[in-house]
Image (cartoon, rainbow over all chains, first blue to last red; front, side):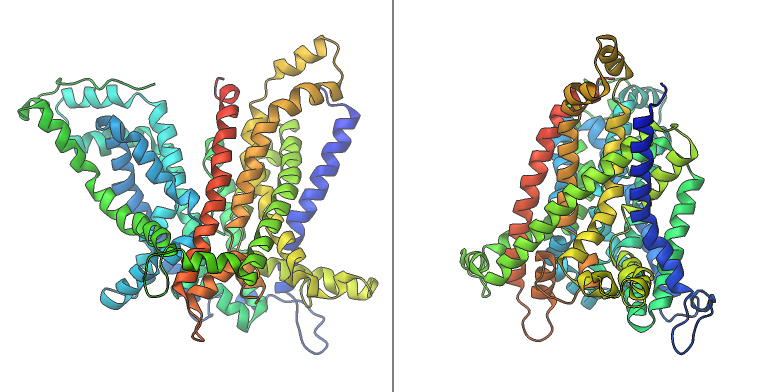
Length: 264
Length: 305
């Protein structure tokens, strides 16, 4: 279909306006992080980028947040996915209740969950451990709607009943059916879910800040109070890193599942 | 479409003696998940909902709910929250919807398309601390635009950053993550519009504006409205961005909740936090139910590809 002049003008002006809105703050971050403040500081340099690694708490927070993301992914793989498959295969009566349970976090914003879960984490930090990786428990629940959506779409697309029956007939155990037969066939759905997990854990601020855990975002905010340039540099660096990762793995199917993740 | 489970084929199944017990024991399989979600999801949900109906001493009643309802600061925060969410949902859905249209009319799978999808999925999650820093670097003290404005337009509002720390600032920041979210939500809908509709309209002598007025817009309205509701909920529940941008503790309902929960100057009041939360949940549930209703309308044509 050939585009008319009108369509072209509309298209270009929309792209220009929206791109300006979205890209200017990103450029401003770069500008700000290379600026020299103070007397006569006209020159630009990368000092605030250079001292990123020596920021107190930052590296620890990054490694902790990555570890938390890893645990969330493990919970998805070994708890949530097998349960979803099990319910699909064996307990058709539970499908609706299970779906409703998975959709609860859509109705309960993170700021509300933190109100309800504060006593639990107070108990955990007094009696078990103060490590922020325990947050993986509540994080895995926060992403439940998105995990569920990508999983159920994947499970509906494959005839897992026939697959399971075939495997059982050939003598496979149920664990083998779930982990060896069905999970590989819904790989894309699981990868999507894991991707969301990383994005959520690295971007989460609400819960960890209110519960006083030093996660990645909380530490960035803390750096920002002392040294704005460095905090801006760190933010831009992590943003570009994620964008780079996403461009490396172009996948059209991802689009449908990386929707509306509520991490703000 | 429900599948009827095929029973009794493998050798493993014959091990259990009765079908009755086999079906019952299958329920044990969900037990680990149930315990886990009970602890980290159902318990906090119950805690908030039941807590909203208790006063500070734990007595059952609607005292705190009524108090919060009548408190002028809670009302002001709630009004601000609703207002900003509505504004950013409208601005975000219009700008994002148009941008998604611009993406669809371009070459699909081309660099611009792919880059826009990737950028949108990053920026839609970009709320919070980092977003605040981005806009402070743009409009804040010593920021890109404010430095520029001080030089060339000293009298304008851009030259001083105070507007950023209020309603206008929050709305501008929220719209920043609403636009890419709208792109992600709305793009599949636009992609599923059939070329044949346009062809049919053209063949019958319809002009471009007639096509959009009579076919395009009516067909897109339910999913557009649904997406806008999603954006509304998204900014209504946002906390991190506002918390790192401004210091007003009850300017928005999420900020008021955090203050009531954590205040260190002796004002901590979990009962109030739970009541405020309950009101928030009510708004979110209403919006999400409307969304579900609209999606049902949409799914009829979108899913029957």
